[in-house]
Length: 432
Image (tube, rainbow, N blue to C red):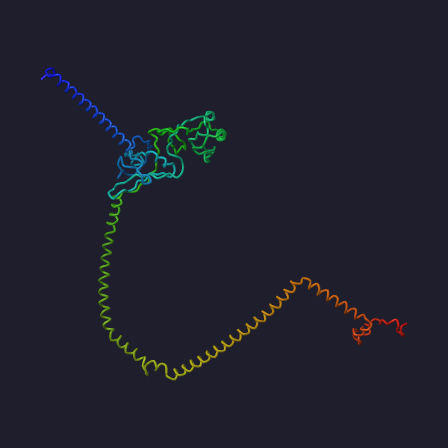
């Protein structure tokens, strides 16, 4: 039935239904596109499509256990993935070329010194994992600042000179002593030193701006940052460990080589055990034959303890009596000496006690004398003055006419040593 044959009411309802279906289809299409875009964005974010990556490469002996897309480890984290594994040409010194990427910000841990690529065993089925180590010294492997090569005159005219950094190492004329390290600020004094060295051009990094992509890569041979291209990736040296299967094969080979020796050793052990069994059987027979001898020795040793036994035959009874008497005498002498030592000890203790008392009395006397001297500081001067005055008194008594005769010398002195003439009183009649 044609549309013209429908009534106006039916045509109106049909047009409304068509518009509703159109809006529904449009809304479903929009939701589908939005969902697909969200899925792509989430997948890209999960796989790091929008994250900055830094490429590296290394060489290994074999590609066993490594596959493209395997994660790269750093300190236990998944920081990137392997992007390429290929065999080297036949005459190259290396066997397998492995290229991998490390995403931001983990490539900041990779420095020119200390960072290496390790190929370690992951499981017992031959799987291996690529792991990079954190750098310890040197410079960042990649730079994200604009790289320029300028002359010294152009470098002097750069704006914000202190924010520009050297992108190379500068050595002296001999080429052995490093004068400037990379990332050294471009101060005026540094430019003057470079001019004195005869440097014409230098490579510099503008730290005022940081790019999202890699701009320069470090060339370790030339000690300089050079412009980055897909052909000049940074090389990380590899430390490779063999796969578990190879280790097991070597172990099985060693076991196979050692197995004949092991079997020979077991045969020798069997021979030793059989000889030991025969020896124990012979020892049993010997033990049975020596049992009567042992019983006889037991009987003899029991008789040695009785009176009249072999021990008394060897040492007579009178010798034992003399020995006991000697021991008694020695015991008495030791007791007497012990008593004497005790008496001497007692007397010595009493003597020491008396001597201590005497010393205490002497200490008391000296302390009293010390106290008297300290209490009267002029006592020594008084004693000295008393002695002087006493001496003057005695000299005066010697010169007095009444007591002069009491201090005369010897009368039988030799003639050559006559005493001086005696002094007489003025009232003496015999005086001339």
